[in-house]
Structures are given as structure tokens and as C-alpha cells.
Image 1 (cartoon, rainbow, N blue to C red):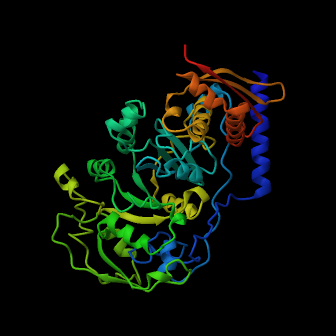
Image 2 (image 1 turned 180 degrees about the horizontal axis):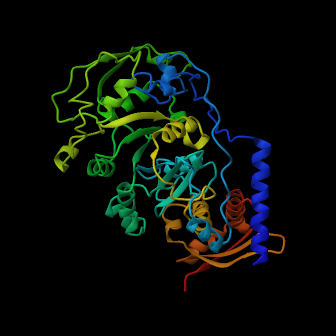
Image 3 (image 1 turned 120 degrees about the vertical axis):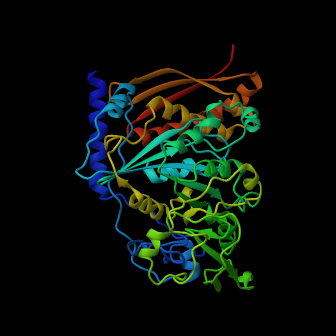
Length: 473
């Protein structure tokens, strides 16, 4: 008992010392390729109605439209706490009564999107510490998990969910039934939903998947925000406007937009501003109802490019989006009820702080769910399994990694507070074993080394990880 407590105290001391030395946590707001620091808090913040307190923060679209720059906002909060290495210690933290401030605020956020859109990467960047697995292969996240961000009197609960998929794809990747139901369950408990789209995938970027549209249609009362991810990989920046228009069906926050770009597309790779024109369009005669958020934002709107435009279908009337049937969804490419649009590059942390500030502002008065020292609802073993599976997915070809079973043989703390982990990776075939070990043990050694480093960053202690590969009996 003394060893775990001593190790926990050492981690706490290390965390506190690091926070004191580095000062307030500053999430990186690096500039996007071909952009400069200007714009509003969201991609369309300078075009649509936004509260005055939010105008002026950096955004990719803001720079393209030439919105005047303002000073960057102040830094956000403290360093995130480490995850406990002892299962019982983590359980006690989760069961602790939250240290409620006098006027607590809270927001539950579901992040949905197609597999491999970058949901877990965005979650890790928002949290400030890697606790969710990330891989280029689809279905890295196997179950819903919660991340906790505590900033001053506000607590954000991030619901990281598996990518929305269908039964056929789930069977192909040997996925549990929970992979199909977890995203829907998360939506039931969310106060706001972020829809993440990978703009680097030219096959899918101009339309939301049928599964995403179904999910949004089932919960039309939940405010939704569109997040365009991987914008740093898009060389032709003018395409962001076309993508945004397609994914929103030309309507954001109840406003009908028509975006026209000049024919000078050959200069789109430079950092020069593009001559773009945003014009008022006639209210459509379609089935699109009004946004319930138009009224609040119209009151705060001053100097917007759409000050005199009309709300679509009664925006601001409080009617809210209607439920769309399957027939309606068949004809839809986008969702016309998004409140806002954000453009970022989650992998590099670009513009993630802008989104984080927006989420903090959306929090409503209400009690916290967790103690401020909690970073995730996952157990330390779950984090370890997920990180190792991430590396296995990364270094094994095709469908091979989806057949690997993980068994933890040893989990204990050493005399000096280091964490000792021994895990067996069980594969169905001898050929898979050879692939996983690699020539001269290079593959399995690399997996152990990289996973161990990620675990040290999550637990803030030394980790000695040993992996052994066996064929299932």
C-alpha cells in the first residue's frame, strides 16, 4: 500500500512542479498553411452573427475573407492532471465527490463522424494529454470513453465515440455490437455535438455520411457544430468554402448563404487573400426549418456581413429543426442546422484552442460530474490496452491487427515507483506472429518502445513495458 501512495505522491509533485515551471497551459495555435492570424472565433464567425465577446480570434476562413486581426486571447488554464496508475486509486478518484465551485458550469460534448476523421486526436488535443488511441486505420476507438476538462468554474465532458459505421463494416472488422450503439448512446446524453469531417479525403469531404445524417436527424434538438479537420493537408484553400457550403446545405445558424469565388483559383496556394463574395440569397422553398439559435445570436450581431439578410424558414422563432425521415435524408448531402463551423488541424493542435474556448463559453450553469483531478473515465489498464492496440494497428498490414487479443500478465509498481507491465499479444496464426515480431524483433520492439513512451506521458511516471507474442491455443 505504501508503494502506490508514494508513487502517486511523486507523480503529483512532478505534475505540480511542471505546472509551476511552465506557467499556464498554452495550447498551440499555429498558423494554417496559407493563412495569417485574423478572423473570428469560428470559421464563419465574421460572416454570421456571433456575440461580440467572440469576434476577433484567429480562424482560417477569417484570413481568407480579410477580417481584421485582433490580439490572441489569453492562455487557458493549468496543465492537465496525470492518470493514476493504480486501478483502485483511479476508481477512488472517479467516485470522489466533485470539488464544486460556487457557481459551477458544465457541458457534455459528443464528437461524432466517420471512422478515421480524427475524433480521438481532437479529444487528446482538447484534453492536453494523450489518453485515447490514435491510428491511421479505421475503428481504433472500440468503445465510448469520457475525457474531462476542468477550467476555472467550468467542466467539459468529452464523449469520444467509435466512428459511425454500419453492421456490414462492423462484421468485416470483427467489431463488437457496442461499436454500432455507443455513438447513439452518447448523443442521448450530450448537450452539444461536434461533427468532425476529414477535408483531406476528396471522396467523402463534400457530403456527410448516411450514418452521421441519421444520428443528427434522430437528435435535432441538440445543438450541432461542424468541425472541418486536417485543413493543413488541403493545398487549395478555396475548396474549404465549397466544402463548408455543401456540408451545411448553404445554411448556418439559420442564415442562407451563397459563396462565390473569383476565377483566380490558380493563386489559391499562395498566402494572398482570395477575392470572395458573400451574397444574400433568397430564402429557400425547401423543407429546411429555422434554427433555434438565430434569435440569441441576432441580438449580439453588429457589423456582420449578413446584418440585413433574412432568417431562413423562421430562424429565431424557437421552432427548432424538425426530424427528417429516411426519404428526406436520401436527398441530403449536408445538415442545415449547424450553429457554427470551425476549421482546424487536430494533429498539430492548430486552432484547437479556438474551438476549446468556444466550448467553454457554451457551458451552462450546472453541477460538475467529476473531481477536478480526473482527466478520463478510463481505467489505467484500458488506457494501456488502447495505446498498445494503436501501435499494433499502425504496424500490421490490412486486417491482421483486428484479430489480435491482448492479455495483461503483470501490472505492478517497482520499488522506485516505476510501473512494470507485461502483456501477451495473442494472434490466430503463426504467420501473424512472425509479422508482429518482425525481422530480428524490430516490429515488436518498436511497438513496445513507442507505447511505453505514450504511457509515461499519460501516467507521468517511468514505465517498463514488455510485450510477448503467442499463437492462440
